Amino acid sequence: MTFRRSADIEASQAGRAFKARRLAAGVLLAATFLLPSAGHAERPTAVIPTQTIYPGETVDASRVEVVDVTNPDLADGYVRTLSEIDGKVTKRTLLPGRVILVSALREQYAVERGSTVRLVFSNGGLTISAAGSPLQDAAVGELIRARNIDTGVIVSGTVMADGTIHVVAK
Image (cartoon, rainbow, N blue to C red):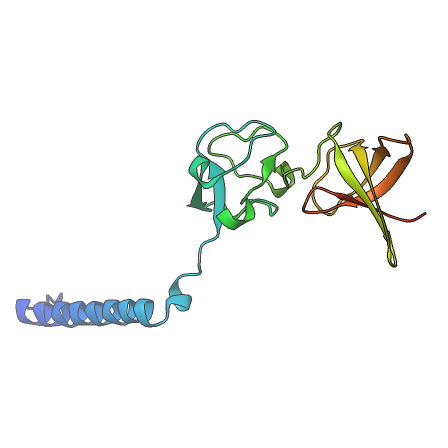
């Protein structure tokens, strides 16, 4: 003998299944709004150029955009926020749509090779100042060599924010 369900029983069971699915969807929706960390982790971001940026050019916010990272296998070492590129200069060509590596950026130079700067030597109450010429480009805080223009002596010193070089004692 075979049995067949009546139309009333099938409708009753279908209604219960629909109510259960609707309740589960409501619970999931509530969990999404009440517990955002449970459903979604904050997606990492990356800064990418919108146009080609050549070596030696200053990177500014008008030439880049911040995008969500969708590739989970992307290696670290790339710029994630606009604050990381503020005032930086490129060391190599940056292509549109590609992440910017931190190693591709440098600080702006405070002194440039061949320019005239002030050399300052301080020891206790004694301060000696002279004109000098850096032998290399350097950013603030870097230790470089410079030539005293008057004597031709090469000295080492630290580049300061005001463009002077504070000479270190031997």
